[in-house]
Image (cartoon, rainbow, N blue to C red; front, side, top):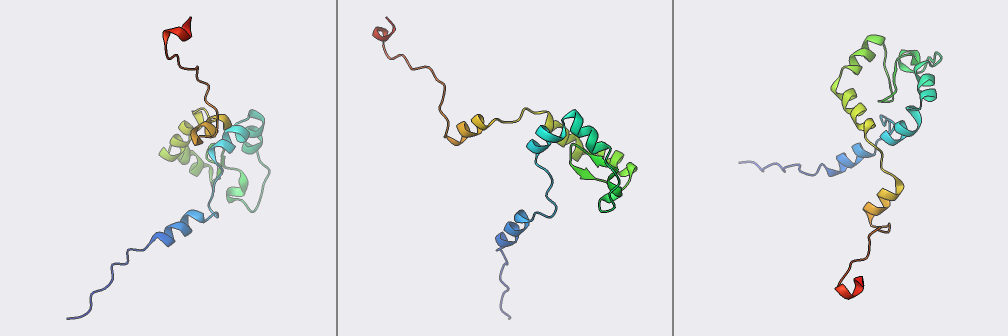
Length: 123
């Protein structure tokens, strides 16, 4: 009888490397909300000049997902997809402010009224 093989359970390093990759990183939701959804900027992005380095010469761009597509059919197919609809739903939500983020981290000051402890404090 031979020796048993190890279970190969240590994949944590691989997952860290996958999470740190930036080659396929898209724009964050808050960047799209504050910059790209502005009507002037949106018109600029939808009518870009020809660029030979971008897919589809840069003519088929989804503003909500910040992605270029090869053909118009691919872009229309993307608009019908679940991924695009989920992204649009996320963009409709109100973004968090810096104050809300600090409060969640425990750095901000709460705006509470002082607690009344007895009837003498009221009068």
